Each structure stands twice: as C-alpha cells, then as structure tokens.
Length: 326
Image (cartoon, rainbow, N blue to C red):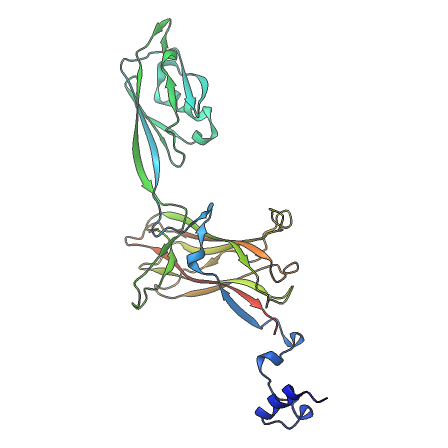
C-alpha cells in the first residue's frame, strides 16, 4: 500500500514521488538522527528565577545581597586582672587557657586556639580594661568567659561584662536576582554581583537539578552557555565567570569520584561597559543521556584595586546548548 501521508507531504512540496526527493530539504519531522553533526546545537535556557543560593539550595536568589558582618565582642573588666588562668567557653565547650597579665596578644592566642572557627580572629583594646574580639566571617557570639576562673593568685577577680555589637559590613557570596524595570530598555531581569569597586568579590548561583531534555543526543555535544558583562565601570584587574557541573547518580550522590564535568577554565568578560560576552563551557559527555540531572554552579569573580565608581558584574542569560535528535 502506498504511503499516503508521505505522498501528500511531497505533493505539497511540489515533488512527484520519493525518487525525486533526494535533494529536497524536508521538514524537521523528516530529519534522521544520523544526519545530525556536532554543530547542530539548540539552546535550552535555565531560568534565572530558578537559580538558587549556592550553599542553601532551598533558597532562591535574593533581590539584593544579604550583608555579611564582622562579629565583634567587647569584654570590659571591672578591675584589672593581672595574671592567673581564665577559661574561655565556645559553643558550650569550656577550654582552659593561660594568659599571664591578659595582654591583647595573649588573649588573641587563647581565643584562636579554642576552635578552628576563630583561628583568624583579632583581639584589640586596652589590656586590663577592655578587649575587642573581631572575626571576619564566623559569628563569635558563642564565646564567653567563665568568670570564676579569672584569678589573681588565690583571689577571685571581679566579673567580666561581655558586649556584642555589629561590625563592618562585607559582601555576600551570592549573586542577586535584580528584577529590572518592566518594559524599559536595558532593564530586563538579570543576576548581578554586589559592587566590586576597589575590592575582590566571588559570588555564585546554582541550578541543582538542571535536566537534560528528551531531545538530547546521548554522548553528543553539551555545553553551558553564559552571557555576561560589566556594568557602569570596567574592573581594573580581572572579571571572570566559571562553571562547575556534577551529574546526579540517582542514588543521593554524584557520579564518579565525584567528577566535575566542566572541561573549560574560567572565562574573562572584562571588556567595554555594555559589551555582552558569550562564553561556552564544554562538558564531558561520554556518560550523558536524556533525563540526566545536572547540578550546575556558576561563579563570578571580580578583582578591582583602584576604580572610583561602581563595578558590577551581570549575567543576563544561561542555557544548556545541546546536540539534539529529530
């Protein structure tokens, strides 16, 4: 029986029969998988509104970066302790520490020793009167001093008064989803960094469950494609974007050891203001198949040392560029 459907489609194309159609470009539903090449790429966008905080994937990107603060504690001695042993307590664990004469250096050494969280803390102040403990990233509000261990020989020293105040602000390590202004030129929603003027920032976003579509050709070309630019001012040192990608193993872990599938190093987008850079990050595809779930983390790093105006990085689009089958 003749293929009535195929004959009708050929009639529409103006071809008498199948034998005359060898040079005719047929519609997409006639394409065979074997006709695809490595260059047959189609983009499948990852929605920025689905992007997550990289280390808290239950949380969508914020509209502005939350502020990370130095945690500062001020300890005021009511009378000068001039020697003996005091005991620090951190996270409900008491640890004895020696600090003869309780100088700032001695107290700093003692605090740094009690826990890895506090290894970079700085102690300043007036010895014997008040001390300030500052940590750059880790809250130290759990630090306390066991007052009964402040001794002058066998004489109990007066109590320590512990105060907690907010320290200097610093940038978050998350990108922010900026809503823009609806219908306004150059103001569509995008993911942006905080101001990197005269500083170094490294901020991220994550797509923890990006799924390869059914159209993907197993083992063929797959890449993460990103469009990025600098707004307002160019960083005077570097501006790069990087991708890490891991494949879920469907058993609560990652495939391999685990193995980062991204083969491409961090790429620069430090060009003129308003110039959008499109960069591709090639993935190892030998084990990739339709339906595979990828965990993708995008990192923007900007280093600026001398700029006097705002330096802001922007990602306007991110997509999976994949070989597909017809």
